[in-house]
Length: 285
Image (tube, rainbow, N blue to C red; front, side):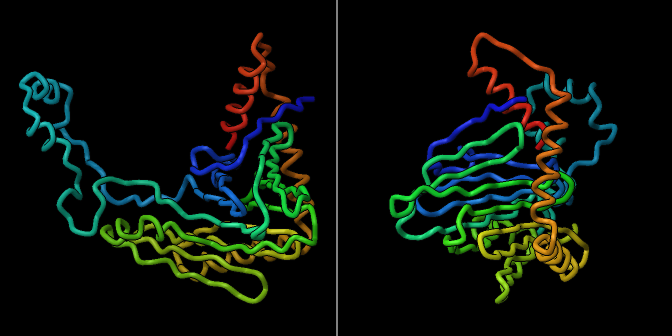
């Protein structure tokens, strides 16, 4: 059975240097520095579908070729102006919308050191040092629902968790295309998150629940703002009833079945083999 893993060294200051997990619909990037771990969240279906270009007879190959041959840049730009080019509050073209991130703070004396992805089980594991003691955080992505499970290896750890929406980073642009700020929520049961309304697409809610040394995060969508929030919260609350361990086992079984069907590639360069396996791992995200 395959046991290879890929490792990272902290600090990881950018999302694109981070550690990936996903299930085809929802994905995360794990990155950060010092005592702060960031979990950037995205979904492949969270699009603003407004805008775009309706193709007509004027976009024929012959017409495009004729304009190219004439070197008329202005006419070419005019030809491909989008339907919403001059409509206030509309984007020029459809685009995916960022969601945001969770932050995990494990205390002032802590420092994140390393991270690994274990291909066989699809598990990511982050190590940090606090008061000269090594601790681990395990990340498991459910493969049949949009749930991220995170567990700390000691009940003594008391992390603080915060949900930060993408509005904090791209809110000014989103205002120009008619988005309203997200609605944030938090309660005394360790739950929190936010709901992002969309101008013409279903809303998205991100919710989390921290209970002891376990953390669950989920995303949900619905045409109604309240329903999106309700669904995401219901998922993270129910996961703690009797499904946390079952979900971890089910994810591990999914990856075992997946690798059983992946061709074995033996290369003289073992680093290239690991790169191949990491890309096969990413292809299922």
